[in-house]
Amino acid sequence: MLSGKIFKRRGKGVMNTDFLQKYFEKNAKRYIFGATTEAEELIEIHKNNDLEVIAIIDNFYQQEFFVGLPCIKLEQVPEDALVVSAVTNSRPVDVNNLLEKHRLNYCDYFYFYRNSGFQCPKIEFWEGVLSHWESNQENYNEVKSWFEDDYSVSTFESIVNFRNKYDLSFMKDFKFDITNMYIEPFLNPFEDQSVFFDLGAFDGSDSERFLRNCPSGNAYLFEPIPSQTAILEKKYQHNKAIQVVPVAVGSINKTVNFSLSGTSSKVVEPDQNEDVISVQQISIDEFCSENKVSPSYVKMDVEGVELDVLHGMENTILRDKPMLAISVYHRAEHLISVPQYLKKLCPEYKFFLRHYTQGYSETVLFAV
Image 1 (cartoon, rainbow, N blue to C red):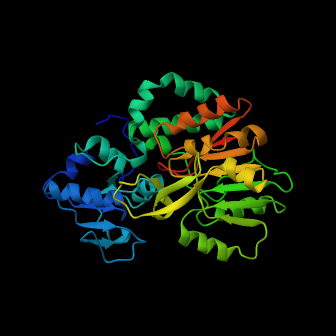
Image 2: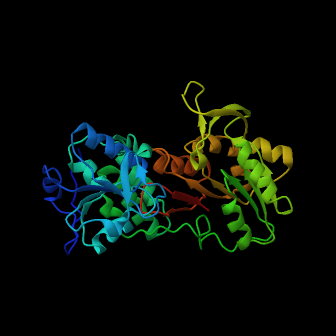
Image 3: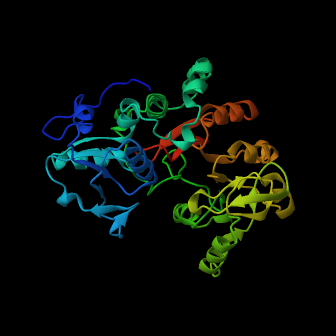
């Protein structure tokens, strides 16, 4: 297990060095905060090690039980409870603050991962992050030097440390705020009649946000899931500024297998045991050529195939030099490999980095 700085807090509600010693005592009152996937894994680990968990704490979970355990409200937790937070994304720092406010003894998932001695599941997107960093430290430092502002540099350092050390203290200054995601001051004002490519549109909210900031613009929403495209087409059927494009995007035109996992739906290999459908994939270069369109701004959140999509839009980038907003958290290497690729392809791009949660997701590289 990785060692790391312990995140200590003042007051009765603390995460401290003797928490786990108390937690593993025979008569400890153990609780898990959050009805999450990580909570399911922790419940199984406790069961396999003959450790009783009394209940799951979640004020928003609507069912009476979660994985066989009663689900209770935070106000019902006794003051001598020992709580492990299973919240790893969106607001894990806020959860720590909430548990402290209620003067409870607690630790977060990352602390438990580092120090419990159990083989807790790793964050899926962090597979191989430490070995990648250890093998590419010079490249990490080089990419860090490319950012245009100090905030990008500090964000980069925090993300790298958080991933490598599994230590939530590196995220204590971040807020969960996706209200202006993809719309940053260094992008505005958009030119009149700008064209927005929304790659991984899902519910269309990012395109709506763009059009609020560029009323004369147009948006192309690329979304391959038939049920979702049907919703989008109905939603925007009277909006002439929006065109729904029911395809996946990648490096070449072909048919691909697509898993159905809500906001995490993605291209998968044909032999993976998942609920999949076949969808048509197109490259952005081909789409632009066929439709005689040039994007001004491209947002890309395509669940780990961002580099493949970039390979399929090289001509578009070189010709139009659109502003880019690319998710770089789905794969360990993307935090540096995406800016490296763009720097080599189009050296005049200027880079910014933003992170919109307190957890592992929503790290966005901007190239402008």
